[in-house]
Each structure stands twice: as structure tokens, then as C-alpha cells.
Length: 569
Image (cartoon, rainbow, N blue to C red):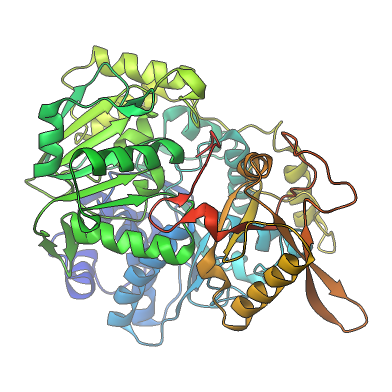
């Protein structure tokens, strides 16, 4: 099948400006061109997995000979990853031809609504919804013409990051459909445990040569220290004067597992070290889109990072307090990392933001989580206990050694697909493949479903006058196309908690008006309905995929939603 005139090393040197590709990159080049399908690639973060899989695909454009596939669909677990990967691929594609189209497809930026670009970078949600034609259930999405996926090379990158059996079951079903349809695909991961690999590929035949393991040497080092006390407990931080002094002197990253703890740690650290606003920043998933972008830019201004291939080291103090949102999408290199205990794959991802670049040295302090108030959430308590025990029994663990990392992950994690939980979606998915006119009703990627929160500058009161003000403010944002700047998504469980705490006041409900032939919205005062009653734990007034309003009085641009009592991330 191989018919590319340029050899792999010449291609990397000419188009990627990489003098010497890694051995695993050369193997992937050969295997893809030989038509080996599928491939599983396990390689460290930042090792060049993306380059490895797009190189043979892009090489087709040199001879205009599409022996692999005329289209590539690059699937990622999160929106936050999409833009960065798309820009990276676009940079390489432009070096070959300005006519190679690279487009983005996710909920915020629908560049390629019909999957018709040469290269599409998308999320697994969008890939699934489009594959299953689930438009009425989830709102706007892509529609996939019959030939689009069938004529594509599909890449599932960061495949370890979904972390729940429900999603892995859907992913496995998609992989099996592609496999049976003889559509080439590649699964790429840094920290996929062996149990998950066996579960995902249970009904897919693969030779050993199709499983690529890249053990690359690293010259960076991280010294790991386990601390006996939780980082935050009893409403205060547990940090020695010595460690506080280190935090102030070094470029520091502090990671908490829950938003509410991250907010409190941020406030305590800032107060204890008498820091200015310019010296510290908080990151988590419950900022509006505009505020989150501002905070991410600020984080890069505080911690060493690369710009145009060169390391930039900001002056002065620099402290980033974050939740697990930084495990993907933000590439910087702290000198000091303080993190709450998390599953092995999360700890490895967090360590990738410390001493990230060759030759650097860093320190990593790992703290247990408090046992009270479900402090272990969003993770399973047994998983954290197993991880802590392994770390204690392996004091010489080198988290920059990929072989040791894989042993750590394989021993402590037991991720598997769960077809029982995902049964309804699986039935719909397979029926969509069998019957082209089937309209799916139960398609979802995760067991939980999101709602959208909109932060509006309205009084914290009820009444018809305020309801009309909500309507006017929302309409103004729609007209100015700024509605996403004041919005963010959360899990329905969090929305229930916020509704119970009376942070959520109004619902924005969209309906299609048959008379005007237009989509129109109305604002519903949730505490003035005929059925109005005290909020419950799982209140039917909060619905998946709904849009809800929180008054700006409960939202701080530096902290996020205040009085956040939800135990979920």
C-alpha cells in the first residue's frame, strides 16, 4: 500500500522542522501507510503523538495520492484542547499547501458543520452526536453525511481522560463500528491502564505490532514528598512556614480536587503571603468563558512557558491555584507543585506541569484529602487509598520515567467500559447504524448531563419587573453575540445544589413557535411558579441541557460562583 515518495525523516525535517523523529514516530508512519488498522499508541505527554499520526496523512497531499484516507477526523475529550491542537495541525498543513483545510467542530465554534474539511478537530461529544444524528435531543450539532466518516482516518487522542465506565462503553462501541466497517482509526494515550486497554479492544483483533509503546528518556526530574496532613482542612491551609517560604520564592502550582477548596486555598494563600492580585491567579471550570480565558492568560504570565519554541520566564512571584482543569490545555512549567491526592493518571498529568522541559528540576508535594464532608470527591475513596498506599511503598518513584508511570497506572487504576450503565445509548447507537431513518432519543456521552449557567447583572430579587429585566439583559447579550462570554456549563448535580441554595433564580426556556416559524425564549421565575415549593435534592425544575440564570451578586470574576456549597468539581 505504501506509495509516498518522501521518506519519513526527510518529511519531518522539511515540514515539521524536526531533525530526527523518534523511533515510535517512524513506526507509526510505516504502519499507517501499510494499512495496519487499528493502532494503539502509548507515549508520554509532549512526546509528539500528534505529529506521529498526522505526518503520514499530510504526506498524501505531496503526491496527491490518498492511499490512507482523503480526510482526517481528530477527536479529543475536551473543548479546551481543540483550539490548540487545531492551530498546531494548521501550522504544519500550511507548510505543505495553503489549500489543506483544517477546521474546528465543537459547541462554541462550528467551523465545519458537515465534516467536509480535509482535517476536522472535534470533541467526542460532537463526533457521537453527529454520528448518531441526535439533533433534537442535544440542540445544535454536526450532521455527518454517509461518506464523511467512512472516508476518514479517525484519531482518538487523550483516550484515557474520560475516566468513567459509561463514556468508555460508548467509545468502545464507536471503535467497534469503525473496525467492522474497515475505517482506519488510531487510539492515543499517555496513561491508559492495562484494564482499560483490554476492555476497549476486547472485541477488536490486533497484532502486537499494532500496539506502539514509546519509552522516551527524560532529562527533567521531580522530587516527590508525601505530606501526612491534608492541604486544606477545618477551613484552613496546613502548610509549614518553610513550605510557605518556598511558595513565595518559586513559580508554584497548587492543585485542589474541588472548586470550593481551590477557592478557599486561593484566598488563604493570598492573605498569608500578602500577595498582590498580579502575583496569584485561580483557575477552575466554573468561570464564565470570558473570565476563564483571562485567568488562563494570566496563569501563563506567572509561570514559565514556551513561546515560539523558546522558554519564557516571568519575573517576580508567580502562583497558580487550580482544580484539575489544568490537566489538559495549559502548557507551562512550574518549579514547585503542591497537589491533593488524586488517581494515578491525574497525578501524572499534574506532574506534567512541573519541570516540563528537558533539564529542569522540580519538587512535588502530595497531600491526602480530608475525610470529612466527602473530601475524596469527585474520585472514589478506595482509588485514592490504593494510590496513597502505592506511593508510600515506592519512595523512589520517578514520575518522569514512562515505564514507572505505566506501572503506577496499571497497578492502581481499574477503568473499564460499563455497558449496563450505557445500555440505552448503546441501543440507539447501533440502531442508527442499522436503520438510517432512526431518530435517536437516548444518545449521551456521559452518565451525567450538563446545564448552562448564565451570569446576569440583575437584582437578587423576584417579581415580574426583575423577570422582564432578565429577559432584556439576555436578549442584549444575544444581539451582541456575547452570551457565551457570560456563560459556562456545569453538571446537573451541581445545578441542583445551587438551586437548593437559591443561587439559581430563573430559567431561560427556548421553544419553536409554529406561528412565527422561529425559535423564541421565555424567562421563568423558578420561585414564582404555581408549583413553587422548597428546592429538593434532585428537583424536577432543573432539567438537563437547560439554561439557568444566577444574579451577578453571587459571582466574583476572581473566584467564580461564591457560596459554592456543591461537593462536586
